[in-house]
Amino acid sequence: MKKTNPLVSDDSVLSILEISFAYQKSKILLTACELDIFSVLGNEEKTSKEIAYEIDVDERAIDRLMNALCALNLLVKRTNFFSNTKGTFRFLVKGQPEFIGNMMHKSNLWGTWGTLTEVIKKGSPMTYCGVGDKSEEWVQSYIESLHWRASLQAPDIVEMLKLSNVKKLLDLGGASGIYAMEFVNANPNIYAYVFDEPKIIDYTKKQLERTGYADKIGTISGEMLKDDYGSGYDLVFISHMLSEFSIWDNIDILKKVRSSMNKGGQVVIQDYLLGDDRISPERSIIYSLNMLVNTLGGDTYTETDIWIMLREAGFSKIDRINTDFDSDLMIGYI
Image (cartoon, rainbow, N blue to C red):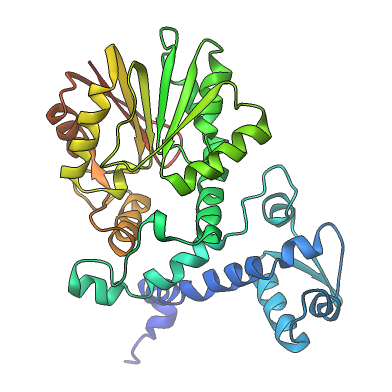
């Protein structure tokens, strides 16, 4: 009997091969973003020769890249002319309201993810430097990456929370300040503060000035594990920040948070949560490896992990709110 060819009969082989080559598709997209091809096209049709001239690259090479982008349904080709799809025009063209950003932060992660095998052997990043030692370009791309997703999620997340008794609020690790802005929009009686690393706060201040929130939102510059967060807060919001630290560091952070809050206050933690089996959901699992290659002790945590951190920090009542996004909310009360 003729043996069945697994490339025809076994879907698992194709799935394995698809995963093994997935990095190639990622690099095609990231390279296109680095070269700003989508913005150069805008709402026009252009040949690869025109694109090569505008961005000063090799014509033969850029034609091959743009054909690949068509194969991935990221561009459309008509005879020899290329144009954006509805999706790439909406999200990848500079100046559009929902522009994702230049994807440079994701490109920056390429190098650290390339060391995953060595990191698994060693148990810690091959090289590490904190935000304070990063370049201005890295910091800006990092904040832009956080800002885009937060700007889409913030209105829905804030709407889920009880804000009627909140007058003073802290957005801990608030980066661009987009959540602080949304809290102020939802309740004009709130005065908010954003706490973050000095290099990030410099960017935050510019954002607040540019968007007209400088008189409604203050800033506090400092290091998470070392510096004081202020006092008198009715709500402390922490979005995708605890995953950058170990459980023990997070307990210390949450103890500082509790001491900064008024009686009856609440801390709201938004993050990717693992299932108790620690193999789902997929987004949280992959993010745990991102923390492995990029932080000294960070991880993604289960609901139980967060519950223990909050209890150890002195929060008595703890709730969970599921969202429509990849991340969920854990709320601790005092």
